[in-house]
Length: 103
Image 1 (cartoon, one colour):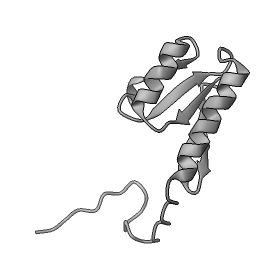
Image 2 (cartoon, one colour; image 1 turned 180 degrees about the horizontal axis):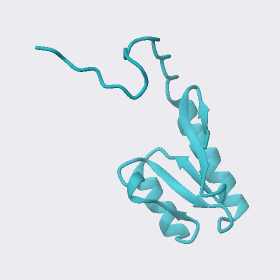
Image 3 (cartoon, one colour; image 1 turned 120 degrees about the horizontal axis):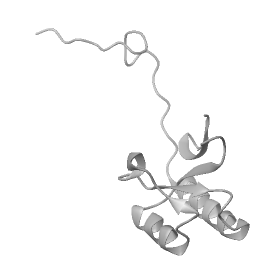
């Protein structure tokens, strides 16, 4: 599933047949507040435990709240410096191959 990027940084993406939105947050504490606010709409999985993101069940979240949360996420991500473009050929080798060091 493609991600929505802002200045080259992750903002959001859909998952679970577009029924859930993964949304970048400023802090993990912000996620905890959202989950306390509406436990049916906001949650996370083990994959996101140590990452400032929240999963949003789109069928459960009120539209005004979703709008506020997405707007705050956008403000946070847009304030970050743009990602530097990766230099081509920096990694070496083909995709999926590991470079082996020789001593």
